[in-house]
Image (cartoon, rainbow, N blue to C red; front, side, top):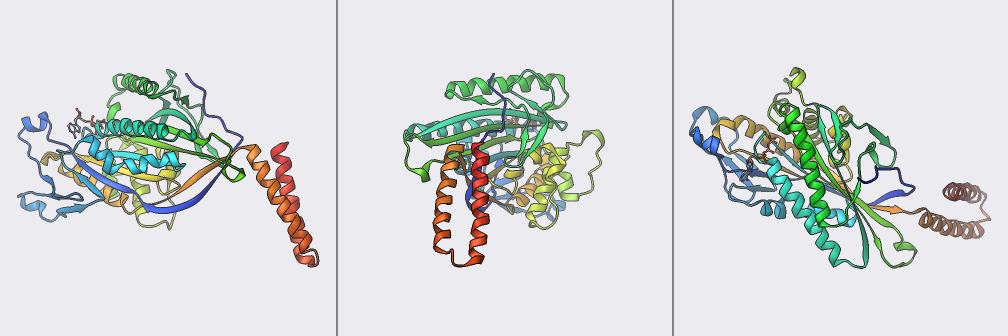
Length: 402
Ligand SMILES: Nc1ncnc2c1ncn2[C@@H]1O[C@H](COP(=O)(O)OP(=O)(O)OP(=O)(O)O)[C@@H](O)[C@H]1O
C-alpha cells in the first residue's frame, strides 16, 4: 500500500474566494419489492425539475407543507447519470481547478445513498481522467484515500489494520487524519481496484458489527495536484492542489429527529454523534454564522469542516423512499435538505508554493522594497516602517532556506 499523509514543506495560499450556497438535490427512488409486497403506496411526486410535492388523501397530513423546492429534484425514473450531471458534476469537477469540493448523500437507510454515491464517484473520476487527457500542458498527480467513521472511530479503508485513527489539527490544512493511507493513483483500473478494496473492508465491518452499513459514514477522497509542465515564468510557478470528498452518510433515521424537534438528543448508546452534530451544524449555519458552530463535537464534522460552510464547493443529494410508510423519515430528510440549501460556502483556489518558488517571490519583494526604501529615505516614518518590513522578509527567506 502507499505512504501515509505527511506534512509537506509547502505553503498553501488561497485566493479568489467565491461565496455560494450548497447545491441541494433530492432523489426519489422507486418503491422496492418489500414496499410493494405490503401494498405500500407512493405519496411523493416531482412535478417539475425543482419541486417535489406530497400527495395524500389522509386528512391529518393536510397540516404539513405539501411542496418543497430545491436546486434540483429527481423522480424515480431519473438515472444516476442524470443525478450526477445535474446535481454533482459541476461541483465535483471544481477540484481540477484547485478548488476543494464535496458531494454528500444523505437519507434514511435503504433510500439509495450508496446506490447514488457509488455511481456519482465513478462518473466524476471518469470525467476527471477525461479532463486530464485534454490538458497535456499540465502535469496531474492524483492521490486516493478512504475512511469510515463508525461509532466515532475513524478507520482506514485501504488498510487491513482496523486500529482507529487519530485526528490532528494542522495550522494550514485544518483537521488531518493521522496515518491515513494515501495511494498515488496510476490510472482508472487502479482506481477501480482501490474501490474494490474499500468495499471489501466495509464488508468485513458489516458482518462483524451490527447495522454497520446504515450506522457508518464513508468518505472517499481524491486529492489532485497540478502544475504546468513547462516553466511559464515566476508568476505561474505555483501548483494547484485540492481534494474532492465523496461522502456516503449513515442512515438518517433517528438522528434527523433532533433536527426537527431538538429534544431526542439522549438516545443512549445508539446515538450516531456525527450525524447528530451534522444536523446541528447545518441548522446553525442555515441561520447565519452568528454564534458557536460545533464542528468539533464529532469526527465527521471535524474532518469535513471545510465542506460545511468553509473553503469548498458542496453538493448535497438527499435520497428518499416514496413509500407512505416512511413519510416521517422523508419529511425529516426534506427538512434537513431545506436547511442545507441556506448554507453558504466560500470556495477558493488553493495554490501550493514550493520552497524554491517561495524564496524567489520573497527575493522579488525584497528587491522592490529596497528600491522603495531608497526613494522614500527622506521620510523617517516610512524609513522605520520599511526597515522593519525588510527585516521581516529577510528572516522569512532565512527560515525557508535554513
Ligand atoms: N434510484 C434507484 N433505482 C433503483 N434502485 C434503487 C434506487 N435507489 C436505491 N435502489 C436500491 O435500493 C436498495 C437500497 O439502496 P442503498 O443500499 O443505496 O441504500 P442506502 O441509503 O445506502 O442504505 P443504508 O443506509 O442502509 O446503507 C439497493 O438494493 C439499491 O440497489
